[in-house]
Length: 262
Ligand SMILES: C[S@@+](CC[C@H](N)C(=O)[O-])C[C@H]1O[C@@H](n2cnc3c(N)ncnc32)[C@H](O)[C@@H]1O
Image 1 (tube, helix red, strand yellow):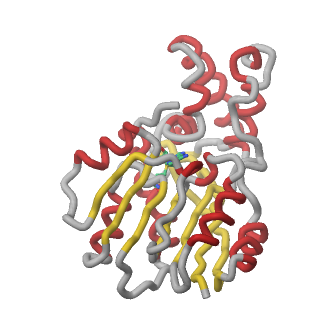
Image 2 (cartoon, helix red, strand yellow):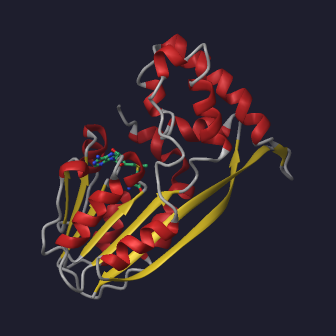
């Protein structure tokens, strides 16, 4: 599955906010090694390098496109980016801060991985993760329903993640506690207002729809997208803004966990 960094940053304001809400709860004073796992196109990792100029900050991602985009921008000398697949990765035991924003939902079995990572981190280290908690929301449920329909099932069966792709806040809280972390776990539903035509389709084109697009040719993708756009427009009806523009409320639930190892 390919990522498109340009498409991903289309809603940067909405997509970036949870990262800052997450990392504002990490109060590490003087870390020496900070890792951003599943760093994406780079600007958010850069904010970590600017926040901790004396730390070595490493952004890791399994997508060539994302790492290339991250490396192509000018960045401070304490920041580097590398290709890495989180599903077979382990943290350097000297890591002081491990951040992962909107990535773990892509890895089946990530809760087991988390247990291993938390065990490998040293006392005093920080762990900060955010995952979307919206797999049962209409944007995802309708996509699965369409993919499972008679028309698409032969091509798309098993391609999409199900509503158990992420755990509930309590599941993560228990994992952190069992690993000896002081914890702070919470959830937020952002009342995102998106402008323009078919904004929910535009949003998922950058993320959740990518596994579908990877399986279909151009004509098929257009047909799938047009059916999907019709379904989501009913679930998230557009309304007129004060200046006559088309607006859509797209509520988005996210789950946050921050811990510090005792
Ligand atoms: C939704 S984006 C989030 C990017 C960035 N963290 C942000 O908050 O903007 C998900 C990122 O996770 C990366 N990713 C997905 N699976 C991964 C894996 N197994 N190992 C490393 N990165 C992965 C993708 O390549 C993508 O850049």
